[in-house]
Image (cartoon, rainbow, N blue to C red):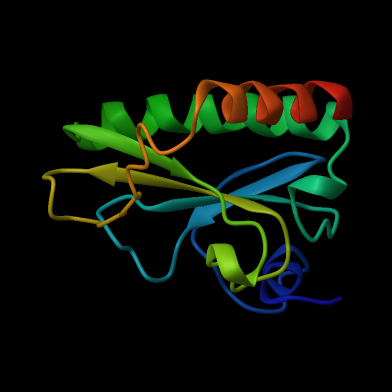
Length: 137
């Protein structure tokens, strides 16, 4: 499953690389949805979050935090989104695991819409959902 990210990792195509170690690489997203929009990518080709092990996910998130602090210091955004899409229906377009760090300068920079279904599920339904997730742990 060679992806555009694999080509960046192998230096087959250029990228503005911010950080790199044995497990992950981070570079500016070519779209620059906002100033400093950065991708943190696993070097190994995991398709999505469901394939990650504890070691890589812990390390990856440590790097995300480190880079978020650096982006905050460099650009002083008003806020920051950390975004990850898993599967086409969730908006994933590159099937190589990555996290977006998206600095926010105003509310209209990027739009995310979540449906508010508050009150539509009964307490019994919520407890059933909770137990289903707990039993899958």
